[in-house]
Amino acid sequence: MSVRDTSIDPRLLQSAREEFLKCGFLKSDLKTICDNAGVTTGAVYKRYKGKEELFCAVVKDATAKLDSFIALRTNVDLSGMTDEQITETWVMNEDKILEMFKMIWGIRKDFFLLLERSSGTKYENYGHDFALRMTEAYMQYYLEAKKRGLAKAEISKEQMHVLCTSFWTLVYEPFIHKMTWKQIEEHCKVVCRVFNWAEAIGLS
Image 1 (cartoon, rainbow, N blue to C red):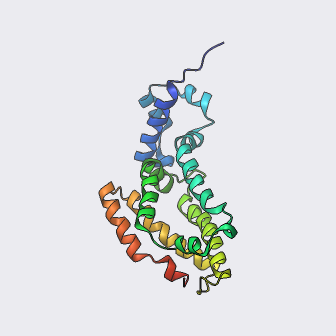
Image 2: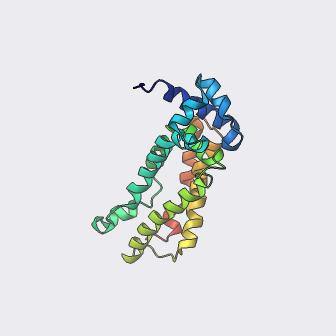
Image 3: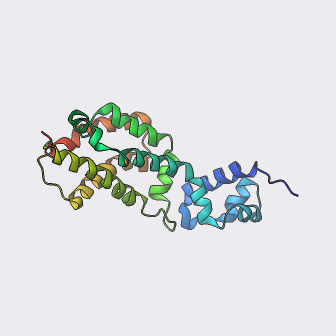
């Protein structure tokens, strides 16, 4: 029985990542990926069904981390939170927002792939879909705040989606434009000054 050469996998994924970053999914060449990794196309097809599955393998860890980020904000028992805790979730705290940027910074290359180089894959609308999923989380918190009399503004789900898309665009853009970490730290301060969630929902 032949033993699978596991040393191929990291080389292949790194080569694929570099090719996808450079050319995007649609224009990337599988042969170039293989040549740069020092493997045959046969080695690829032993591991993946094709180029799209290879792309998904490259961004797998990043999407898992982002899925966990969403889950932590969606799968919450809001009834167990105090009014103060609900209120705090809407306040633009610079330290908390910077922590979010740090999380994305750790996966910035793959985040860029998802946002800008994924056309032709199941992730081609990732930015929109991410904002849509976050809208569900924000609506839960908003409706809870509304029920408790903490939020005075009337916000429809469509309006919340527009607000979420606007907010997350402010998060996406630094990574699309490949800002340095220092630039992102400054950008975070601007985001916290410009985007006021508490006022948007009429938080008392």
